[in-house]
View: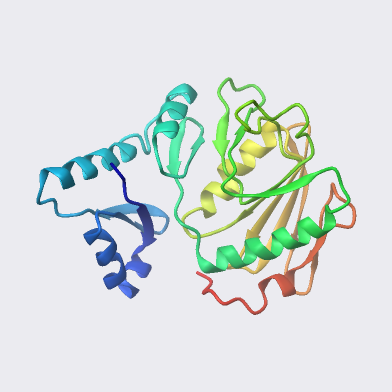
Length: 256
């Protein structure tokens, strides 16, 4: 039996495009509404038949663990059976919303810049969705996350027979949104710090800025904020740079 999609939208988005999301619900999709980054309500289909009930019930099981503590083994079991994109951070499951137009524009530009720089390099750049199991110093269970963009230099010996990467990225990039701002700036920074990531870029569409953290020996060694007119420069990869003005110029999408 096919399951439908789950959509996470802000209250503002719902007001602006109510007809669109109502149509999705009519097609047996769930729509979760957030306000200030917190889930406040959910639109669910009105079930009129046993078949519809079974479909909705099957999908609802994906949500029952959200916000509850589970083990890494439990998460992996849930994840393998679900069609949802999700992350596992500090023992909790976080569902991932579909990215916005602005997010994808920024991600595309960054991928091109990183790909061009790494063309003759042994390291590779990858885009989400791409699962990484981050094993944190002093903590038994890893976090499982999907960075927006990541640079991997240890592919050799860290790809399983199931074609899964199990190493530690050298550099990760996250693009902030209203629903992920706190998680990206606090929780993920801590995970990347403790797991041995060397450099973390936070791209902030609202502020039109890039923060670059240099992480060393599981600590924040230093950081720098690059704003309009500046050139964001990698600490680990000499010569890898991005113009902040060019990155945020001529965006089609609307910045929250």
